[in-house]
Amino acid sequence: MANESYDLIVIGGGINGAGIARDAVGRGLSVLLVEADDLASHTSSASTKLIHGGLRYLEQYEFKLVAKALSEREVLLKMAPHIIWPMRFVLPHQKRLRPAWMIRIGLFLYDHLGGKQTLANSHGIKFADHPAGVPLKAAFTKGFAYSDAWVQDARLVVLNCMDAAARGARIMTRTRAETATRSADGWQVTLKTSDGETSEVHARGLVNAAGPWAVRFLDDIAAQNHPYSLRLIKGSHIVVERLFDHDYAYIFQQPDGRIVFAIPYERDFTLVGTTDVEHSGAPGKVAIEPDEIAYLCEAINRYFERSISADDVVWSYSGVRPLLDDHEDNASEITRDYRIQLDTAGGAPLLNVFGGKLTTYRRLAEDAVDQLAPTLGRHEKSWTHDGHPLPGGDDANPQQLVAALQTRYPFVPSSMATRLVFNYGTRALTILGKAERLTDLGEHFGADLHAAEVDYLCAHEWARTAEDILWRRSKLGLRLDQREQRRLADYLGCPSLAATEEKT
View: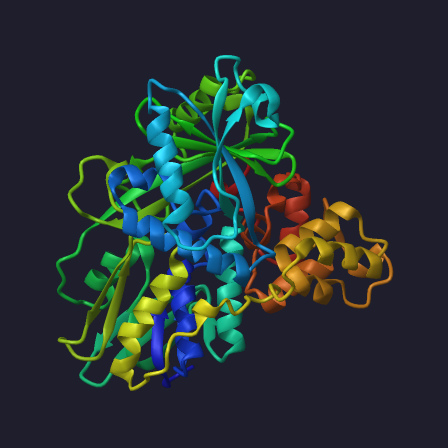
């Protein structure tokens, strides 16, 4: 790579960096994206897995943010129907926390703020004759149902990078920017791979989308003066065995004013989260604390007849949200809207990205490239808002695709066909290829994971370790035991799973 030159180097392989790389290369810019670890290896894979407007943000008068997010929800549902799909949420009513009239007004706004919506509107429900009432305590007699959407978060990042690469971008994972030197006509960046190889690359512009490391990048790598400081807010989630036998998710009001979700997860589990805790340590070293587990278990026990404890947790994960410090005392009250700052005064263009949400990543990328592209001599209009499908998303009806896949490959079990389609969409056909029986898919590692899928992920999705495959490209880490996980690691020729990703 020595002395290769690009229009734009993007630092950071989370959702913001991936979205910006895709948008920019689609407007004719040559792009290099650099990620120090795996794609989506930190904040972007530690979310609550929702594409949503953020119902609770209405109480903070964040109407603009909610409207923007709800509008984006419609765009993303069209872009990636195989990894983003509608989900109905149930909000049990507790009048001592919020009066019913307030919730009705909030849900009315939620139904209409984003403009024309394809998802069903909200309505009141009585739990005596609704399936969502079955697991709830008898004290809860009524509530509300509304619509949002679910997303395979890490896969959303990977698919943006795949599309960017198909359009000509270069994606380099496990490659760290060691130095970035600015001049009037560009940036000279020193890169170092995890193998220890170094190289120098040049770009006319630079994007700092390093997430929790954005300020550190400015201070230590780019050596730029700036006024910014970040608040790192840790969010933790737990996964337990399935707590209810229906497809609705729950949103629970908490006595402290926060909300906790309980969401159907990977067929046999329930995802519970999230917490909001200030984090002062290293961004890459986060783990759930016992008091966070207790908080989430108490949230479930406050509403469900069935109680859970720390002993029921089969997996947990934590991540930090890098929010621009607005001097708000309460971590839950800090704005989740993004901030973009374009700096051209110090020489070659530098665009800094702070904050943001999965739901609004495409809009963030569009706004970022709208600002940056003219400084690099490109004036093409934005293009991603038309719902150009992400890889695998060119079939608008994944359920029909599952049926078609089973017709073509009758030896594939129904559960496996469903998982492949709702992870890869039409790319599932590439994985199965010319196979005529399961044994044609190569070594079987456990659950329904075979070598054909592993090889595909390594060849097309930058996967290199068992951790990449089991916890980001899929969630099969919930189903493979430690012996099976080690066998996968041996197949890949890499170390076994990192301690932070092991089952609790």
